[in-house]
Structures are given as C-alpha cells and as structure tokens.
Image (cartoon, rainbow, N blue to C red; front, side, top):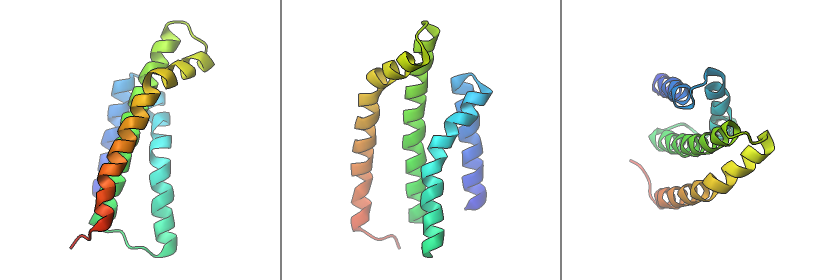
Length: 122
C-alpha cells in the first residue's frame, strides 16, 4: 500500500508540474494537497488506528478533491498574473472565479462519500 501510494503521489506531482507548466509551482502546489492527508494519517498512527483499504480510499478521495481545487485555483491565479494583476488581486480574482465551484464540488463529494460512514468494509 505504501509503494502504491508513493507512486500515485509521484505521478500526481508530475501531472501538476505539467498542467501548471512550472516545476517549482507543481512542487509547491502539492504541499497544501498533502498536508491534510499527512496530518490525518499521523493522527491515526498516534491514536493506534490501523490503516486499511477504507482509510486509504478516503485518503485517495481527499487528495483527488484537493488536487482538483488546486488546479482550478492556480489556473485562475496564473491567468490573473498574466493579465497584469498584482499577486493579491490575482488571488482575489481566482477566489472569485473558481471559489464557488471549488466549494460546491468539495461539499458534494464530501457529502456523497459520507454515506460510507454508515457502513463497514469487510
């Protein structure tokens, strides 16, 4: 599982670099994507919660949501910077253009996958 997760993170990082057309930005963009997952997995290790297929599936979904939001946000940010906006104005523009969609997709996917909280995986 560790090898597969590592390979997936490497592939996602490479795709981020290609999509954003910037090596450094692709690496930096992965920090906010991986930090929540690392915190949750660290807490699970500290609390003695074992890692199973269900936990890894939720981590994969979390990374997918975060990467999707990151791509949308950084695309609009880069468009704003390319049009001459200051960094702050480009951030505000990215939030204005992509923010509602990012929140909407995150809420819908989170609610959709929360159904799994009521069941168990054999």
